[in-house]
Image (cartoon, rainbow, N blue to C red; front, side):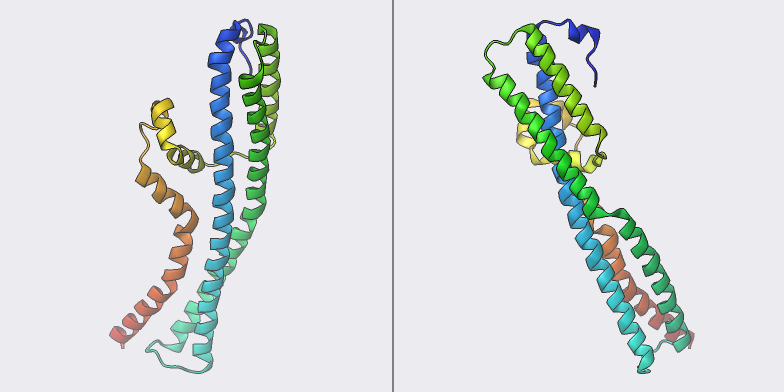
Length: 225
């Protein structure tokens, strides 16, 4: 975000009341979104480990059924095929989940949020404690803090839209008073659903699918035989 020629030559009032205030909101919302992303990814990583542990337990239990020849109305061939297929799927899914590196990416966003927090505090100090800065001082400060801000953004990955929307909803009362245009198209319930589905949705399906599949196999086998 580079300053245009109009902004470079603008009086101090423009920068202090427009540009710096806009930058203040960007930093505040971005650091909030980065911290939301950190929390979401860490929680998702835990959900991933829990889901994979439960599905692995399912496979072990299913294997014991074949070992002890427990009759559930499902043929041995179908049960063995199902166990093998699910094992392959779990292996692929585990490799995919491990490649996401949720904890590492979460830490990157957390560190980015901390760096932006430092710049945000620096901006707040300048705006509230600097007595009657000259136009040149405001311009130099704006250029320097924008350079630092852009450097932080360029050295860290971006958060998801859901992280930003959750930040807006979390601060809904402030947004209504100060930035109503930014939330006029947001649906609080939809954002909450998408947020929790992003974290838990696929793992919930992963947990409930094997029991449902086993029940369907039992019903199908009984109707067939």
